[in-house]
Image (cartoon, rainbow, N blue to C red; front, side, top):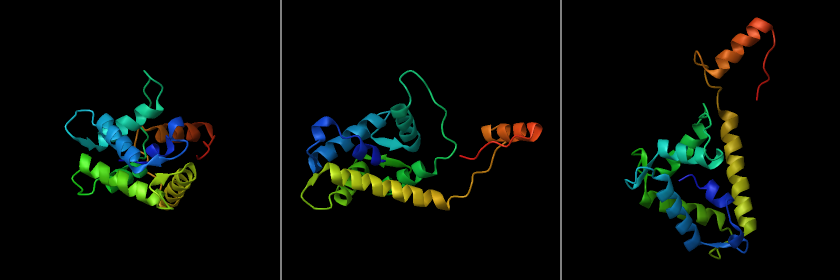
Length: 161
């Protein structure tokens, strides 16, 4: 699974720390919640839908981001056997791996400081990956093509993000 949300979403009951068992239970719950068709596997489409549901206001839909390279790389990292889906076993292996990486003092409990340091490290890796990405090509009819044609007709160039 994409485990950064788990590490960032510590509830108030986790203020003192999170054990490996709690992390595994959260990983199992996330796998079950993300497995929309309840076949025991999570596909990339199910992962994207679940991630969008976490950030979209209830009852509203949002456009899918055109660039899903980071999400795809995280999905591929979790899909250990590269069959295009994440089994429960793979999800638990990912949860255990993330916990082991985050538990720097090896006491079996993630402190808020360890959780924060792990999240900061994951964000740094994301920034480093994104720095190497080439811009996506713009397909006809896409928002970038519309903005480009507007700038050509008006002479106003949209700001780059």
